[in-house]
Image (tube, rainbow, N blue to C red; front, side):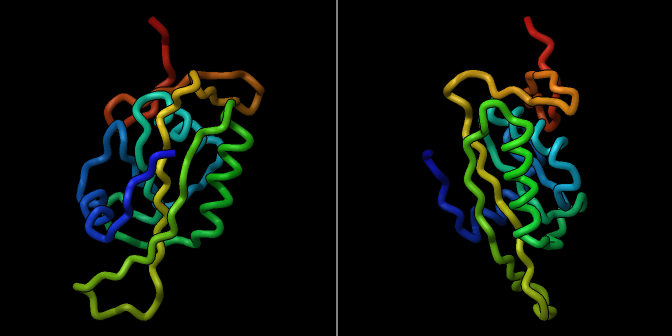
Length: 145
């Protein structure tokens, strides 16, 4: 899988960017089922980045990376057919502007590869297979042509 270099500058630029077809922010993964739709949709469109540990106000709040990794892996294993090719990077965020660096603040960057092997289907809780794509900053069910 061709990968991106994750420098501090690259991450800062991502966080300053707006959500888009190729970029999504989450405070945390609350549902493996829901995040699987995003993984499949990004893989079915252009690939992209999912950054976990960022609030809606674009504040880096941090996460338990082990828990979030588990949720992403579970989502990919249980709900994506075939599995999405992805890379996860634990990133220690250091805010140079803040004097309060008492606790380590970690974020998780998930790089999602565009699927070159056909459509990634989302397997719902009832077993139905659905095709999701990204349109602008939203995950949508593909309605066909």
